[in-house]
Length: 201
Image 1: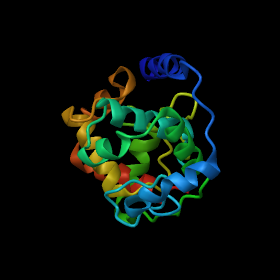
Image 2: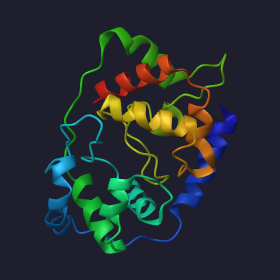
Image 3: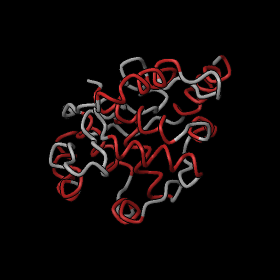
Image 4: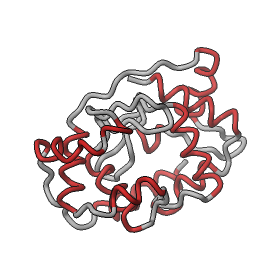
């Protein structure tokens, strides 16, 4: 746990990096029309395999858009969408979606106990770190470190991302933090923690 917290602290310092352009939420709303088809007009997607962007930290959204554009994060649809965006576009979109309110989700009651245990305490036996160490006890995330808000996020999307980190298919996490955590998680733990965060609000 101490190692994870030290790594998180160092990653936070590195993540702050250069100052990003200030985003204009009103301009972002206009630019978001193309995003609405998948993510919803207010950033609350109806398809659970597409992430909710509403209330996500602007710093994280801008980083992910830049990673899609650079290829640091791979997704054929998002690569195409991000290709034409400049840093100001990314900042504007991030400002708009971060200003929206995420719609609450519901967790599967059968998976809450395991999900809460993994989220809050991890699994000492297998070396899985607690999600709350970086994402906060309520899943609110850490905007300074660009650790995303998880509360209310679709469970199927969370499952897909954790499995992508576990396989190494997704590798845009600072210091391999998420890859190292997900590599030790079982499918049952991934499913349970995804359900748990979906119900957080």
